[in-house]
Image (cartoon, rainbow, N blue to C red; front, side, top):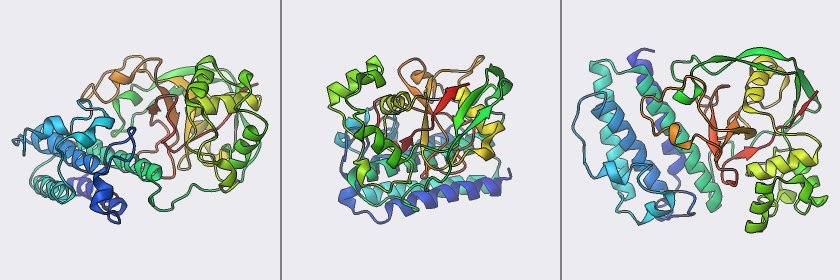
Length: 359
């Protein structure tokens, strides 16, 4: 990409952030709506700090605007539930900080070259935080971004994905470390549903006693359901029946699939289906994130770059991988190889279900 194209990508991400937060009052921006989410103004200033850190300091040799920001806006230094108690910038100051950083970045892009991968990382970082902020808005019952709802489901049936080898992972210059290295994986033949699970489908599971059916749940899932007193997410009965169900946890997605006589796909199966029969799958991207059965881990030969904190601390059995992107996810992020991850009990993400089964 040329430097001017990189500048346009940065500006595109900023327009999305601005449009999302423009309707909100300062009180809504500063309030900690949920312990699962940061105050929106923390996310806003964090976006600016990340851009300053990578495009002005580490890639441009500039001094820090404020050394205090390195602690305040370090995502690994403070859990989300404590960020509302930090001395973070108020909305007007946060916006001014973002403007100052962006002006300096654009000036630098006009006069010299910046590393394309690092610029792409900053762009995607802002777009990912826009989705995180949209999750906060959803939890607060505040208006989110257009189109406000996921697209309706029309497909039915499933697709046979032939067994054999395929290339798992990315060679895209903007791909993250956890998408690399691309490598060959051999899979047996399997079936995957053309359609996402709808609100009507999920309501049938609930009405059939799915939340009381111990056999549908894993040990971990049943323990979570009992501990949380979990019921159906966001009242699926009152939602548009043909929309994909969303805000379901991994435990719920797994239980639904078992109840339906199916299972969740592994992430390798999901990616092979997206790459080989994707035109036969409805809403393979851009409707809801789709839980997979796979724990989040590095691919063989994984190398952390440009910083280890992005992926590596989350590797292991604790987190599960989601694929496909939601109606909130920007297409730049929702590529077939992009790996999202979260804890199996999390519901605030725009997450749904696509089932698979053995042949």
